Image (tube, rainbow, N blue to C red; front, side, top):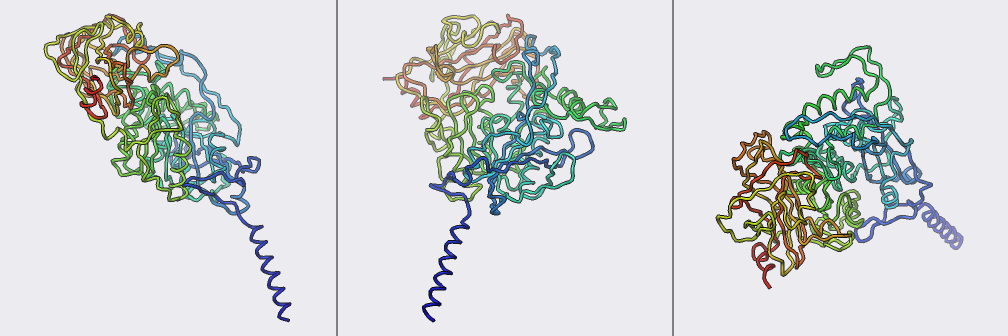
Length: 630
């Protein structure tokens, strides 16, 4: 009898063990603090993909209903069959559904005098592309196999998302907030844009991370500035953090690199792929007492009238380039107080589209606020995410709650010249804490090559250049002599020199006209030709309007011949200038690639004694002087 009971117990035990193995559920796996690829999550054919519309708290297309954002979800099937809940990687964009097609006619004409009313330009229509339910396939193969759900949404007024694009307006912050709220069970989602059948994110842990590049990198920051609960971490890559800094520079109308003549209304037109469906208005419309037609054929027409042709037209000011309330509202630095998300920032030091000041200003503020921060910089151009290991550790820590010690990692990771982007060098912070400003002064001879050094010599006099946009900056830098620029160079470096931080230029100048462009390049000479990275030649750059020498919010016409002191930052940088090179400070007027193109001939006179460059050098003045001696 005892034997039989023992056999029965053993049989039950074996059955229990076998049953336990059979019912083992798939779950995220971590090694060295990073989420690993899980085989059970890595079968695309079994991924569940569906779309929905998330209701926001705003109505920006004028139909009297709260706008809904088109959202798509990609998740492992175990979130249905095994009750698995996972954190979310969320990406939002205005580009997913197509953009405007066209050439230079879409941009503003830059060939006119500074302060002159520009000629009108073409406003194109955008045709939506893409099919439901797939908004985008980005990031899916990277993150779903590692135990995340990937969510995409089209931003307001693009694709099948309702509302209007505002290019940095409040709704572009509240739209991703609504999606995060839905992922955390606080907002409503529906199976159709106007229907009532609800969809719930039952598979979400309520932990959300966001990432993306350029505009797609701006949106994570925009969402984070709302302070929305559940958005735990963001990784913006080359984000536009201020539309003023993107389209203006120290009071000057200045285009982003590669897009001469673009402005905020051009970008609005470029992305406005939504709002095609007709709406009923009962022949009546009242919006902010604006004098608008009573009947609109489509939501797009309404948005064009309200946003592009009223708010943007009245606020963007291509005539003075001054900073105003319109631009202040589109500067995310002004809205960071509620932000709680951990920030890993990524940017290229040679990004002349969305320039590196965009990332640094936000990183610095987040640090001051006590938020978890890291920054990754590389030596290339626009875009470029951090290595997967960095992103993985960041999301594993803040979305999965893995104690991997990321808080103790180095704050700054910089890809050194010639290194792979996957192999950055760790530093205590950016700028390098060992860097300090070295004031460099000018000596005469700038039409050919004047001097640039740490010792100030008085009575250097004044030197004049003649503006001509027809001569581009690289040609000016390479010229042995030119009347169109002034250049001042250090002696040849005998040792490498490490620059880290934001150079600042102070120029005492006079103009022969009431308005003039001012452009400054810091270059490494001799100029290297052929297949070289831009970092081999251009160290950093900056632009300013001398009319704004006293105030960024109010320009004042220059009195011809009167001298003014103009001070402004160049773009942040971290670069090692090699021995055998010279550092050159080039001052000129119109920059063919970036500024307006006024009629050539304006004279710009520089008082050398009132001009200096403050250059952040690792090791300070001792290192600077040491680099010039054997």
